[in-house]
Structures are given as structure tokens and as C-alpha cells.
Length: 288
Image (cartoon, rainbow, N blue to C red):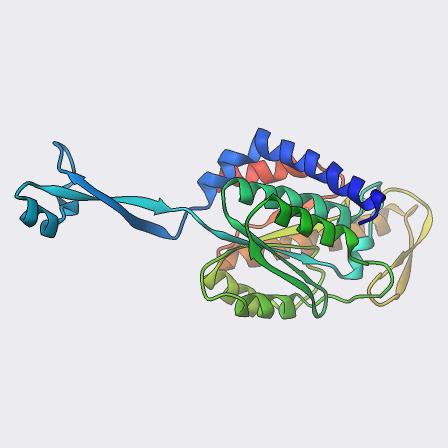
């Protein structure tokens, strides 16, 4: 690992671990429950205990009442799925969508290991780019951060297929997982797969968009390029009507995404690159 990359990994580790310690530890724990209750031990019956938990076999042998003690099975598996298509390189401010993906993924990863859960990483474009199976531990999270920082967004023009990504996620595990899906969701025809994955898992879509995509400033005549297919469009941003029309179009896309999620029973998190993602995540956890 180069010294520059090592420095970036360390910076992200320090920032995200502090966020987890300050904000997300308890919220994450209370939001994501274990798979159920598992037997722990038996002890003698005490006044006030629920008689439904009496262990009749042990009671018969000991000739005094004993009850079963259960503990919540806390261990969970979280999959962080990240859209690494070329649209992640878009950013009108200092921060690109890709940068926000990495910070959020690291924060969620450290939250999961603080909760003693396993974490896996899935990178997708219009195909499977990389899958790192779930494991526990700090070293594993640092590997995940390194893979995200190391991924080459720039050399190739990568398109998006949310549908293909969802299909892969549906095949990797029979057990119920928490799946954080980070993307700008600039795609279509994936809602059937979205619904099925949410039925079998706890799916949390995190839609990242750029501040420019909700509030276009007056910059005169500008060229907007589709980073995935290299098509471009010239927009006269000095024209207020054109700015309003383009902003309305993008707002409608965002509203449609939120409405489709609502119909399926999913609560999305929508975060702009010019917003504090900590505030958005914390608000989501509190409402959930």
C-alpha cells in the first residue's frame, strides 16, 4: 500500500470511528435486531418469572421448578453494496458522489463491527465488480475502505445496472442480511428485483445526489456530460425558466424514487453531497 493511500485510509478511519463513537453506536444497535432468541441456561424459578418458560424435564428431575433463560441472538451480517459506475465521479462541489459513498460505507462498517456483526462489501456497475465476503474485525473494515479507495472509477466508462446488482445480492445468502445499497439510482426497470430483495432481507437504499442536481446556479452556458455513455447536453443556466424546468425534472425523479420505495415498504435515505451525511443518517435511525 502506498504512503498516500495509507494516509487516506487512516484519515477515514479516524473520522468515521469518531462518528460511530459519538453518534451511531446505540442507534445502530437499537435499529438492527438479532435473528431471534437463543437458549442460554436454566435456573431455579423465582417469584414473578413467566411460567411459560418452565423447563418441565429439569423440574421433574430436581423436584423443584426451573425455568429456561433465553438471550437475543445479536450477531448480524451487513452487506455494503456500492454503485461504482462512472456517475460516481460527478460533483459540482469539492466532494464527488464517490467520496460520499466511501465515507458512508466506512461509517456503517465501523458501526457494524462495534456491534460485533459481520460486514461484507459488494461493488457493482452494470456487472459484478468485486465481492468481499462478510467477516468481523477492524482489519477487515480497513480492507473494505482500502478496496473502495483503490477502485478505479476513472479509467473505464462504467454504466449502471441496479437490476443486475440486486440479482447478485439475492443469490449470495439464504439468511436475512442488512443490505445498505449506495447509489444515485440513475437507472430504471429494477423495482421487481428491489421488492424481492427487500422481502428476503432488510434493504436500506441510500440515494446520493449532487447539490447541483437540486439547485442549479446561474453559470451561463454549460455542458453537462453523461459520464457513463459520454453523451453531453448544453444548458443555458442564465435562463431562469430553463433552470426551473431542469430542477423540476430532477426533483420529480427524486420524488418518484421515494414514492416507489414507499409502495414497497422501504424507507430510503436521500443525501446530497453538499449536506452533512451524519445528520441524515442519524435522523433516519431515530425515525426508524
